[in-house]
Image 1 (cartoon, rainbow, N blue to C red):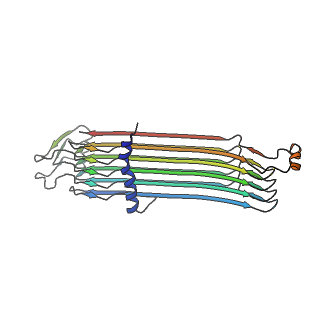
Image 2 (cartoon, rainbow, N blue to C red):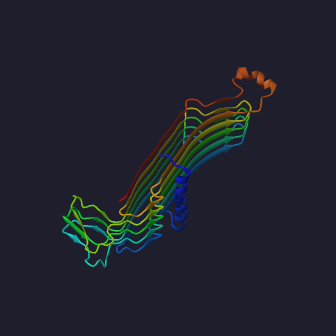
Image 3 (cartoon, rainbow, N blue to C red):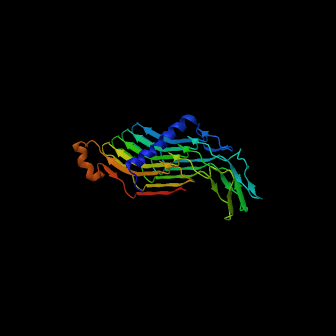
Length: 380
């Protein structure tokens, strides 16, 4: 799906919603919100969820002595985070009937008109994960090693939002439904979902001493991220009688099953940023840098399912837009940039071996990304 500048401008409401939610809500690992208004009152600034998770691991080793060694080998770092939100907002009458006939009030004093729903049922989820390992040596004849390490990040954001305004009925397959007014009010700035995941792994080995080495070999780095959003917005009368049974409106059903307007709602923004980095650097005379036999993997999935139904003649504006973005990067480098050795030493280089070397051999880098969006908008 192609997005113009105007489409992205429309989706800017999600960023504003995320900021507003963060100011109102306390982050949590898992939140479930439910709001009910059985007589069709207004719902405002309700059922919003903000979830924010930060995880980091850091290992460092350094040596500056002559003939010394700095080692950060065979470590394992892992981050695992999940944000889950279930938001269910019903405004106006809600019925789940599994026996006998359901009949609404004759005079419609307790009608089932939906009031307005505004700034409600929005979800902002954020996960940030980092792993860092470093080894450095500056002493003569020393070494820096960051080898045989394992770093992994696993993150998942999941949001399910269901907003129903006006009458919503499931009579379990009973033969007759007889109800009153089922007019839906307006829905604005509601049911928007913003999900973001940032993951990074970093391994570095550096040497600046004469006759030294920097080694970052046999490491494994992996990132796995999933954003899943399911948004279901119904405005106006909605019926599922599980068997195509008869639907009857009340005698005073002047409002019918008309839907009010739906504006700036049901938009989804999903972003995933993943990076793996391994580097070995030598600047010392007669030194070496090696970053060999490493494995880097990124796997990311964005999935959005948006279903908007307006039962009546109301308008649908700037709603049901989906923007998905995945950025993945793998980087492996070995750099040797020493000061040239003295002439007398340089003569011995063919005998002693290379005066300096850099290698980045036998590495594996993999990126896998999937964006999936299913949007259904009905204005009946």
